[in-house]
Amino acid sequence: DAGVIQSPRHEVTEMGQEVTLRCKPISGHDYLFWYRQTMMRGLELLIYFNNNVPIDDSGMPEDRFSAKMPNASFSTLKIQPSEPRDSAVYFCASSIPSGRANVLTFGAGSRLTVL
Amino acid sequence: GNSVTQMEGPVTLSEEAFLTINCTYTATGYPSLFWYVQYPGEGLQLLLKATKADDKGSNKGFEATYRKETTSFHLEKGSVQVSDSAVYFCALSGSSASKIIFGSGTRLSIRP
Image (cartoon, each protein chain N blue to C red):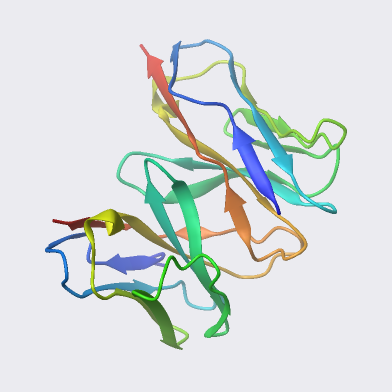
């Protein structure tokens, strides 16, 4: 299994541009999570899906952020328009239910720099 | 709401030293507790977990015991190695087992 695959690994863009981050979860995993990591705020849960349906998007910072999961093998996180404060590492993770301990498998992350 | 508080880093130790990274939590009910580790340039990966009070999770020489009376889940290792240098995250999942909340992370550096 190739694990959780994220692209791009690095993205540098200018303020105001649209950014799309992509994630392919592990086959058979029915939960998908998007996290954002910054030095100031640590690791924040943005949104998570179960069986392609968004369950909790309370962590999405504002309307500029949107996430979709059109099928079980693909999800996107879009920022439009991007701002310098969006600069962070964005992680995608997937999991299957495992009793009371839902163990996440993370991708390698997408490092976003907004100039 | 649920939250996790872990000790500030960075922590720097010499090889073979004893390690403790403190973690306390706030949660209703009976959460599950985790330690994840992040090596440079990689995503987080599960180190160990415990799902009920007094459980001890262990892996690669690391241990943590779920203490409900002190709401703690401190990470320990008896003898650290240079290869243990990484960022360590304490985490919990509450009544919604799917939603996992992470602490701020503790950067550990081990000197040869």
